[in-house]
Length: 559
Image (tube, rainbow, N blue to C red; front, side, top):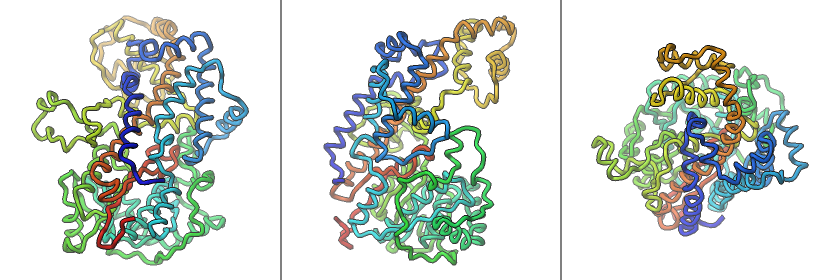
């Protein structure tokens, strides 16, 4: 892969914007208002609506799974192979023998066009093996990975294994003195870097309870570390190992949960091969002086060098930082980039962002002036970060959509749960029989409710609506449900079509951050920047890492 090209990146972003802009009303709609606002007729392209009306809706949903299956097979070289339940495997084996369903060409075109505007379909997303080749060409020594199944879920184990195998060689190659684990939480990544790779790490998290939990967890790990490493090596050699982990092979209630608890190396042939890599790490004894944690809320003004100096008792001239973050939540993802760009003593950045629904978008000047003074600093906006995208607004509901997982939904062929339909139907009922101006309220954690009548009773309590305002008995409520039952069938397909925009929204956010790094010199003058698919996208949906490094002229590390 060639160096990041600024003009090509601008063109890719423009293409994504041109595709997404007319579909933002669909991405920003609320499923609660699906029936009340007639989303199916108003937001779905007319040719698709007509196509569905002329055929059976269940056939259309089957066609959706079929089209997504063929696209996933086409892109299999760019993504990890997801683990599928036996039922899904049987269904997809049938799809493999079939061509696209010709009854739904407009639906297939919608799915394919959305897919073309995702990172997996452009040149700005690298696989792990491709990035490891980049490191190899730059002279970085390969790092052997270690998979620990104890003390963490298989999802977290996979994430820590993959990320540490990249951070460790970046740390060594760049000549960094310390790693900063931004938003390190319970210290899963920090522990691996210190105990397996002997790297000094400062784990920074804003929650004191997380820092305390990380310390307790590390003490437990220290007592059994040698045996954990031995077990991991035995598993890699095919030796059966007993494990006491409560996460190992635990039962799951649905395919998505099953995928999050399975051992990834058992079903993932496309994982980077580390079997022949050389390990020169001391795993028999933990250096207690390598790990430090700090309770600190990180902002763009945080002095990372000072934090490391205070915690490791060092002068600033002895410090050179490798910044990493495993699932930097919301604003923390963009803050990490701003800190890296602003601090010349940061040599490497490797972060996997998440929770796009929690980021702050840049607002218009009129809206900005109405906010409190401490919220008016443009530097605190998380999107857009780049100058190229200034003025573009995605919208909160679209960002929430971008934080969902199309890969997991399609891998398990998961339709929306009944509560989504019940909530949309309730909104219509309230509007027609109680108060059309009733303010919208969230109804979280409604539990296992199997009938609409039960849902209405529970919702009225939650919303504190006088039952006397709803002059409907159980029979009337059931008749109301029956009258609108056709909406549930179209809602299922609407939900799936809207989900197709999820990776497009995420792609735009990540391309904006890549552009921010490029605009600040990390495409030629100061260093380089990359987008890397680091994790299995079904097991860990937020799988994209932003990686950048700063040229070190003193050590002549410029390629």
